[in-house]
Length: 266
Ligand SMILES: Nc1ncnc2c1ncn2[C@@H]1O[C@H](COP(=O)(O)OP(=O)(O)OP(=O)(O)O)[C@@H](O)[C@H]1O
Ligand SMILES: [Mg+2]
Image (cartoon, rainbow, N blue to C red; front, side, top):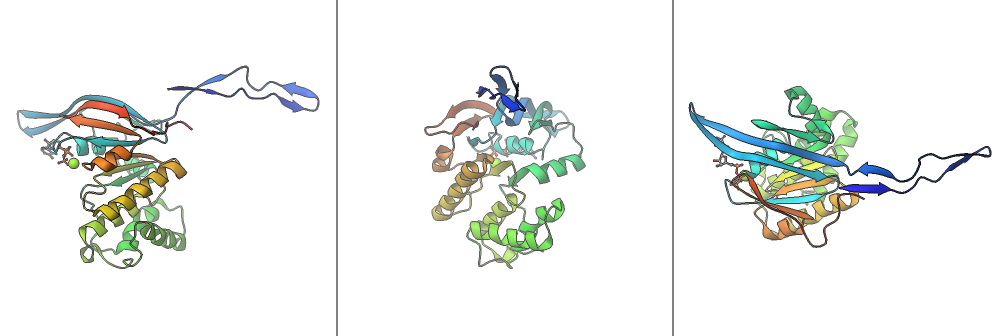
């Protein structure tokens, strides 16, 4: 999508007028995520290949909120892992925030994920020996931008946001499935990721907690301009996004803007 930037007014300096830009400037709308001709094959045995994603391309613009739906086994988690640099495509390229990630090594990918991506896993993968505050603190400790006190305060604030203020010191095995999932959501938000990727983030939640998570995501999207891609089986959630992609057998069957959708461009 193209947008026109308003004409830059001339600057006056000591009686001279400097025309900063001649006429309207053509800008490309910013893209947070781009997938180009993605193919993902799996080797099931020595000479049996399964094609999970045949050839898929699409872009997510900065500030978009996208939901991905599709039957079980249609390749949604595989696709999300490729978007987050957790899995590599067999062919094709992926860009995150203008940077091509396909050829990055594991150390570079760890840095990019830590700085730019918040990933909420379908099976949340909390660290069992650490409590809720420590689990949420971990990405911030690795990042090293905040002091210990700031990290702890922010971890508690994020846990409060997901309704877990009375479970700071519980370890994962002392939490229910839905509570663990909420800790995992708080952890994904720790470093204010530009791109939030969620694989069934409300899968284990009751309708009230799921409603709170939708509202939280909508707020992050609206107020912070964070781009969000969520895989979900939940129709209500899928239809609250600005854009909905339906995947069948690794192929985009439909990709449509929903009513009330916000443009990704401000
Ligand atoms: N490690 C693996 N080994 C073999 N097959 C796999 C592996 N991971 C995924 N698959 C296959 O890839 C296909 C897509 O799996 P994927 O997990 O992406 O589906 P999904 O759409 O996320 O499903 P669900 O809604 O059940 O989570 C499935 O047919 C699955 O059997
Ligand atoms: Mg899945």
